[in-house]
Amino acid sequence: MDKLLTETSKFLSYVLRHEPQAIGLVLDSEGWGTIAELLAGARQTGRVLDEALIRRVVEDNNKQRFAISVDGLRIRAVQGHSAASVAMAYPEQIPPEWLFHGTATRFLPSILAQGLLPGQRHHVHLSSDVATATAVGQRHGQPVVLRIAALAMHQQGFKFWLAENGVWLSGPIPPMFLAAV
Ligand code: HQG
Image 1: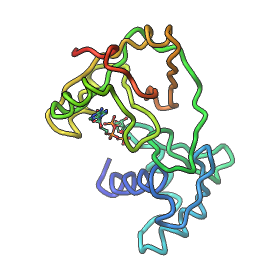
Image 2: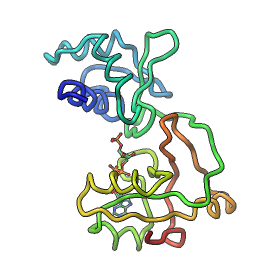
Image 3: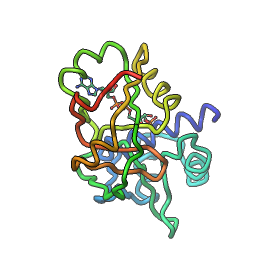
Image 4: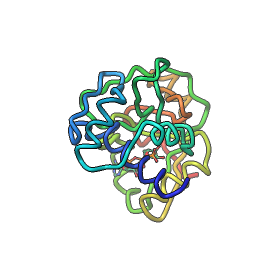
């Protein structure tokens, strides 16, 4: 992705996941906002953005973070939200035996004491492979990957959801289901 695409992707993540009100955008409970309102809001903040650029970001995005509605009028982030107005109904899924969570070593004492917590976001984010989890952990510092006994959790009634870009989501994960990889 070139610099403009990366920068635009970060802007879309910010307004579609966290702070839609920063540009006067309204998201429905499924996370959808209209592209027209997004463009108008961005323009007011002086940002160079047009529909073609939005479509390029959505299509080229390395993690398929965004989706455009079938009618082409609306856009949303497919996971990662913290905005209170959004409560997406992800499809519940039976997880594989193990899922992975990448974090920074400095968070480990707290995580092993409290379990994994969603923090600002609506869910704990999990990966189906160690390489992806390592990259997620690297964003925070010296990475470490935890293995989650996901199927055992499911069998005990914990819920797991799968976002359309392959990111697994869950509620809080108690320490007893965590182990170092
Ligand atoms: C940590 C990116 C202390 C947790 C990624 C993480 C992902 C605790 C941090 C998505 C804790 C939250 C989400 C506890 C959890 N004590 N620290 N009890 N429980 N933590 O960014 O999972 O590129 O909100 O380990 O690829 O890193 O934005 O979550 O380190 O899919 O599309 O608290 O964001 O996707 O950090 O990343 P984040 P995350 P995008």
